[in-house]
Image (cartoon, rainbow, N blue to C red; front, side, top):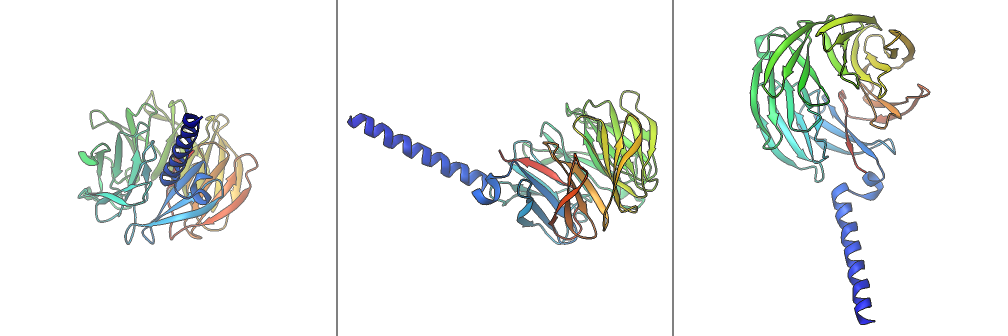
Length: 338
């Protein structure tokens, strides 16, 4: 009987300890543990990163980085680290997601515009682009996430590399060059550019189809999407969308491409098989970047003018909520909490 009581007491101690550990890792229960995903969004104008509970659709915290932050942002697949930059001064900051403390600062020596991470989490790629033609903006750098060090600096023939997407096996990177109207393909293991593909005018963001067969590229000055055949390494179609096509996201089934059209002040949903717009969502302000939630239920759009996050139901195409962010919000990245 005595041994049974001791066993029960020890079991309760273990359970309490586990509960404390879980709360320490994920944060307070009313803010983070009730969220399936947290969204991280850089606010370029005030140098902050907003953290959004995607279940409650509310801001749960803000990290102050500096006077400005980079347009891109990256979080590791294990949810432990977050990468942001200071845009013009060449610094990359690595944060501990649990404690929100700065754990490392890298001085890259280049402008830090785009920040994207390979699906396997091994490498972060940095793009130095600006809306200028100058050799100093034509660099792509590779950061090894094990030691958080720049291991390769690539001088690009493309002008002003901006945003980056990757094949699911983390072997190839596709980098949009906004001032030379092409996309560079990088072999990540070799750390080399292996090809360049001509697309539309001022390609800003791109995303691969779920099967990696096609790359969809948003062309700002044409208001169009370029469809690139990855195997052929060439543009095979161009879909007219709306003025200022800037951000792009592909649905989980690969049937639809969502775009943000900054000058048209709308969001388009494009049927890629029919190559036509099936829905146009007019909004107030300037839609900037777009991401579909990992569970596919919502489409999140940052608004550059109104400084908020618009939440759209992917089934009804209705804007169901708006979450206040910092000044000039840009890309969106997700961390799975539970």
